Length: 471
Image 1 (tube, rainbow, N blue to C red):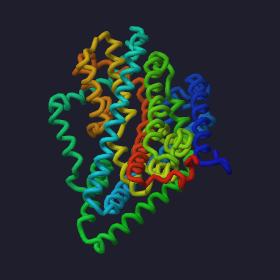
Image 2 (image 1 turned 135 degrees about the vertical axis):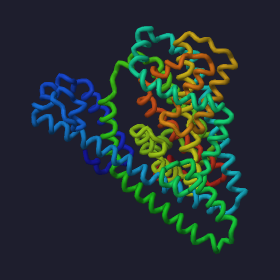
Image 3 (image 1 turned 90 degrees about the horizontal axis):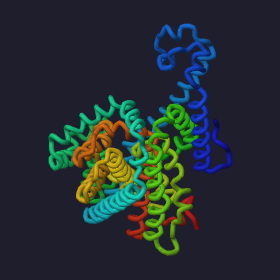
Image 4 (image 1 turned 120 degrees about the vertical axis):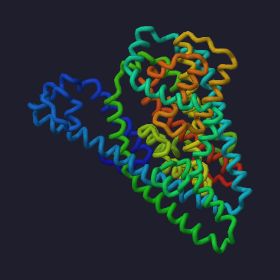
């Protein structure tokens, strides 16, 4: 599906996403085990992995062609995401060094960093408030029948058990102890090992320290290192530009693969819960964030919702397809810079921090999930317990432990602390993947809104010079 000439990139990506969803829905609906059986494939899972199986011994050549296209589709999508992850660490490292060292003043770096973190906390607190309001009004837990609950619990019981078991590490260590351990883990023992492993938080710490170090030495000695960092950051962003030309094809492959694999049973059983999450995320994306943009931008340089969404469209569609703020980070920086008019150094400083610390969508999701399960199991939470859930959601959103599915691990901790059965984690896992795609969008756009707010506060926002800014 080659990109259509003459269209802006965000339209190409949106068209590709729509086509991918339609193809995925069609494949999920019509391509059943009976269709595989008609092609001589009795064990589709083994066949797609090219594993030997007697059930597939007599498969037809048509099945081989189908497998080729399925594997090729997965390869293209995975290769694109790997390419973005490959350059995510260099983008963070060189961009932050250049941004911090370019400021040239330790106090100014501290001021901008402090304003950024305060903005992160403020927007996540608002997200928590939105989540609680939605759940207390809609009461999604009352719409799930006992039989549906039992079926969903059984479907993901094994994975849920592993996640709950992982949460015991946090409980045994104690919340305060674990919090300080997490802060300590942000400081790398070996910065080169952090770069090799792709630990973004440690990469940010190392880059900020090196950038601060450059501000403390004479400018004539710091300038060569600063020029190298800025040149390498520009080179990496040039690679991002090349990758984005391939984005429509990759987004089509990623979307079609995921939608084809998603079953509808879990979505139907928890439709009201999913609607609450998606509705809450939509209220942040289409109401709260545009209001904040309007308030923080100066008169004459207002960024309207249409201009914001147009400028962020490539990052939004990629975030939805990849479900990864880190993988989307290079594109987020580019959109904030070229689409919204944020200066290079501020976009390079705020967006990487946001990809690790600023998770408005995750905070909202945590609160809705915990309160939904409390309603589902008939657990009446007190006011203090609601506050506990909200505070924990912000803490989790600002940085979960380095564990697989860490947000769900932390969710199990919160469930235990307020007396809600942790078996409910299985219900959340049944629909987590799709909702993860949606909340990643809000996480990414939240980083861009913060970058705009900081740039405007510094008097350095230039949306009229951005390619997609609304005049």
